[in-house]
Structures are given as C-alpha cells and as structure tokens.
Length: 520
Image 1: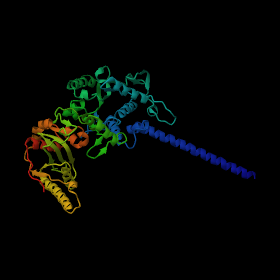
Image 2 (image 1 turned 45 degrees about the vertical axis):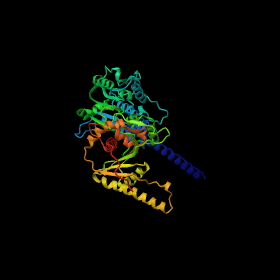
Image 3 (image 1 turned 120 degrees about the horizontal axis):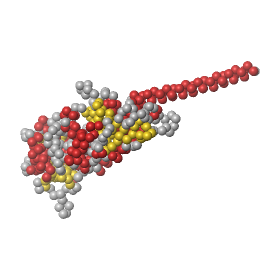
Image 4 (image 1 turned 90 degrees about the vertical axis):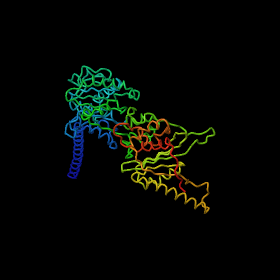
C-alpha cells in the first residue's frame, strides 16, 4: 500500500515537472521568437514599421511594402541606376492619406537607430508641419511600453535614446550627439547645421502657391541657396510632394535632364484608370475616391490623386467653357440646329476609339455624350450605333483610316437592321409607331489626310471659345477629361485620340459641313 502511494506521488511529481519543463520551453521559445523579430526589425525597415505600427502596415497594403523597401534600398545604397550607380536622391509622389508621411517619420527613427550619428533636417512649406514631423519622430523613440510583451523602439535600438537636456520638438539630439534632428519650414532659413539625411516634405502648400510663378521661383531659389547648402558629402535627399505644377520643385527637377538622372522616382496614383484598380482600397475605397472626384475641383483632384500638374502653362486647352443645361427657349424647348457626332476609330491596338456627340446651335456645340474605350469592334460597333440613336444624332462623321470605313459601314448596318426590324414589327402589329427606338441618322466616312497635330493646334482656339462641356464632365467621362486636360502643345503626349475627335467636332461646325445622306 505504501509503495503504491509512493509510486503515485512520483508520477504526479513527474507530471508536474513535465508541465514545468514544457512551460519553460514555451517561455524560451517566445523569448527566442521575440529576439528574432527584434533583430529582423533592425535589419528590415518594413518589419520595423509592421512591428511598431501593426494596425496600419497590413498585408492588404502592398504599396507600403514597396515604399518601405525603396526607402531602405536608398539608405543602404542598393537603389541603383542602369549603370549600377547608387541613387542618393529619391522623389516620392503619392496620394494623400496613403502612408507617405508616416513611413518617412518611421524611416527617420529607424535610420537613427541604425546609426545614432545620422543628422536629419526635415523641411516643409511651413514651420508647423515640419515641427509635427520632428515631434512624431521624437515620440517614436521615446515610446514607453504599455505591457511587458510589447515591443517598442528602445527594445530594437537600446543605444538610441533622446538626450534629456536636448529634446525640444523643433530640434533634438540623441544621447552623446550634439545634433540629431531639426524640423523647420523652408522659409525659416536653416543655417548652422549639416544633414546626412535631407527630407523635403510638401514644399508647395496648395493650389494658390502652385499657380503663383513668382512664388515658385522664390521657392526654387530658397531651396537651392539655403536648404541644399546644408547637405553633407554623401548625404541622401528625399523629396515628397503632391505634383501641383510643372514649375514646382519636382517639375523643375524633371525638366533638367542631367539633374533628373540623379533621382529615383516612385510615383503612385490612387486609382489606375487603365487597369481599373485602386492603389489601396482599405485606405481609399472606390466610394471615397468617387466622392472626392465629385466634390473637389477637377484640377486639384487630378493633382492630389493622379500626380498630374494642374498649371495651364503649355497646355493646349487653357480654359474650357462648361454648362449646366443645354440651350432652350423660354418654353423649355431645345434650341438645336442639328445633333452631330464625330468618331475617331482606333487605328492601332493601343489607341482609343473616341466618339463624341454634340448639340450644334448657332455655330457652337454642347457636348452631350463621349464614348472612349479600347474595347474590340465586336463591342464598339453596336455600342456606337446604340449611342447615335439614343442621342438622336442627325449626322455622324467617321474617320476611315486603317479600318475606319468598315467600322462606319458596320455601324450603319446595325442601325439599318434595327430600323428594318422595328418597321416589320409595326406592320405586323407587334410594335406601335410611337414605341419605336431606332431612328434615321446620317453617316459619312472619309480618309483623314491633314496633319493631326496641326489640326489640333489650329482648332484649339475654336474649341476653347465655342464648345461647351458639362460642368461635371470629369465625373461623366474621366478618361476623356484626363486626355483633354493634360494634352500639351509641345512635348510627348501619351494619346491624341480625344483631342483629335474634339477637333473633328469643331471642324464640323466651323466648316459648316452638311449631312450627306440618311440611312433608310
């Protein structure tokens, strides 16, 4: 009996010891994993960001990893050009609220952890945003644990901590350093300090500054005469800003071919209109994107969310007239000489088909429909025919270059066959006359022999003076809006299909071209 109790006690003791051993092993495993993560944070900037800000650096935000990896590659000299020379200058053009500033703040903290001797100068359009940048960086380094298991900056970089007697939010230093970080506005006149890392964050405040050429000139001089003189030999430079104007710092750098070679450019749009994909739906949903597009002035929206300069210098169409209602008489009846359409078919695989319908009245035009697409002819032919009828077009003119004639004939055939089908149904009593939908229109096709660029340029004044666009045309026809609003007189334009079709509308009116024949 005594031996049985002794054996039972021994078994219990062995079981307890096993539990203790397993718990000890688990604790050791947790410690090892924690240490591995801490070391990984030192080695990898994106891991550092995910650890200190886990609620923001989520797996469904791959653009943040791209941004983090680019910043780390710049810092470590692994960001190289086609000649294997390391870039020392990085330009970041990202939409607002997509993590740009947060990532730069964390980058400054990470760089100071990697090398406490780094000296950072961060500047902005004013003292307040620059001081905020400085304060946020300082506060990351000073973060205190909320729980024993939490990993904070001091766990990752214990040798980098703020000096108690040099910790103001505008300028501060790490322990044993005389200077580590300064945040000041570009106009403050930064003197007396040198920087191994120079950050230029939103040097242009807003649209008002962007359209003030003298202000941009003064900014460029201030940057070159004061700010850049603070760069130490071998320093890295990071410029991040909304692309406001061609005369802003990013624009001027891009205009200087030799200077541009020294810059690595990372540019992202909130929404890619070609692939129909958002940059980051969790930060900016399609609903929010469309809301901003509706409520912001088009130029500001395109600058903020598509990195398109809003200045008008060099643009083909500097000002365009808009309307909130088509022309009507006192009784509310439409005033119209005729409704016209001009269609520029897609000549090559990368071209757009652009079909514009407009109300013509007394030598002017009110655009009522734009169809702009890269879809194949099996889709565009019936869709174009449908739109001609829905818009009650009297006369449609189509370029016949490279297959345009067959396209025009196909559209004509679709309209005719639908008209004929409805007529047969009316005769058979299956459709009432007043319910018919397919009406007569006129279609002509021609071979365009005139120089496209010359036509667009020579008709641009007429377009600006006599053609009216819906007040919300940026929302109604975003691809068309982008093509027209960014088309420049000189330089490379990505596409000219939209300006070509718009020019066609102006020519139809200014030259008084008559309807040629009616289908049916």
